[in-house]
Image (tube, rainbow, N blue to C red; front, side):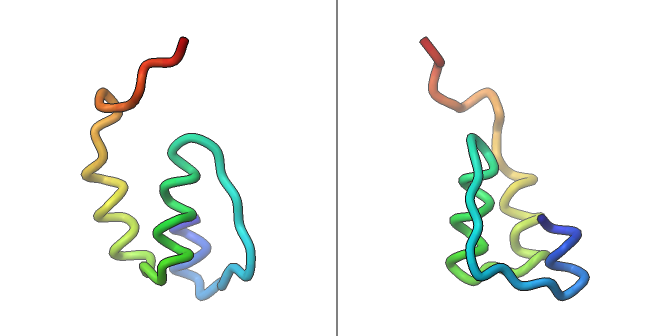
Length: 52
């Protein structure tokens, strides 16, 4: 998604699963590629809910 944003693509609608949902939420809120790259880079994968 970041690569597409960097190339100027816009998304009318989008969906995701797991971490993709987080990225989609930020894009829907208007975060651009640079900001999204920074945010996603700061996520700690160890801090996610345990799956049953």
